[in-house]
Image (cartoon, rainbow, N blue to C red; front, top):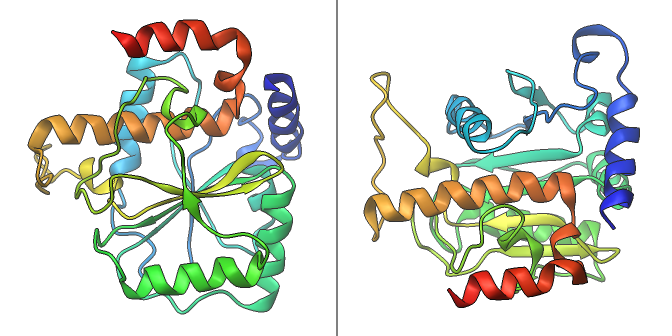
Length: 246
């Protein structure tokens, strides 16, 4: 299974061989979706995520984020795309939906986050409607605790974010993999700092412990986008179960 995902990632990465992104090849690229709406509530958090990624893993990454639209051809050179929102979102056009369907059914992964941290927000209602239009035979579901997302790097026992809106994250599966990961807990808000380097958003209700757990989940989601269901393979089960018992 790992080989399958590495092949997919290699193929996608190798589609860009010229221009500014020719150096990406075997590097992780933090790609964020730009759209007509409040798409960028935390424009600098990717820098702290990179620092954490470099400190705790051996993953190579480009030093800047890539900002794309759905219609951008670079979408297909980006195995992992982040979509954040903290306000306005009117939905996708028909052509954008077709492009996203093509991207997701061919191996792409999207992390979608309602950065408001509240249930039943305008964005929440709109994005669920958009997903239903794109995949009428599928729905968001709670991602079970044995999903490899929770063990791709850290072994996580619970779900957090800047706000503990839900004690779960949701996903939409395509071909036995979670192609869309959806959070309403504002994970990225747990990374946000002011110009002096201080966290300026409180994590509710768990404080700094909750912040660190949110950061670990962020890292797990990124590594899941690179390894897929690798950590659910049978060979890992005894080790994982032993670690969880501790």
